[in-house]
Image (cartoon, rainbow, N blue to C red):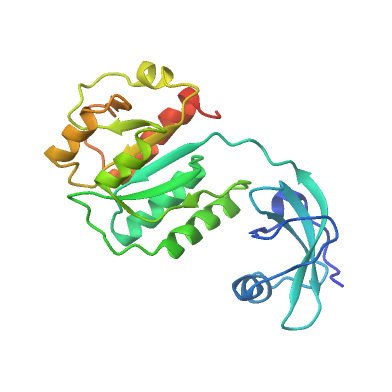
Length: 249
């Protein structure tokens, strides 16, 4: 057993698991988790971690080294109940690799519950590694003491995206050509509805795409101010506005 001094919950390493969490029911680690626990964190038999799965809150769990190759987590105590998370869909044109990773992390930290890549006329990156996007979202949630991880969806062409989501969500369209004005009142008017924040690629939306958006009653066009932002910056600005106005802030 470990002889280390017990740490407070907020100082313990956190791990996202996909299994159901029940007190005293062992959860075997997969290969990547085994490597992280044993070789990266160098945790010992009996050491504690905080675990979550997006459904059953946060738990303090102890490591059980059954063998050198089999490590399990034993949930001991639920420290936080699972909170209700407002549905917030973030739709985006995939950026180049490094900036896409950053954008996924920040969207997760800002409370997006669903991440939808959209392939537009000016999209830079059509080679999307969904497994990598999901891993980035998990890592962001682990590091920021979040209890939910957004779902990452397969990419949709722009027209398919509009057909699928315009009937169920109010789409907030961040339009560089919109008149510069405060978007607060426009966003506030959408309270209680399912929200999708849509941010385009670096080159913006094509004329055809913009006209298709403006033609829909379910689309609210907002300005992000007088400065032209990069797409990842625009994502942070738009999600912050929504969360601060009608979200869970």
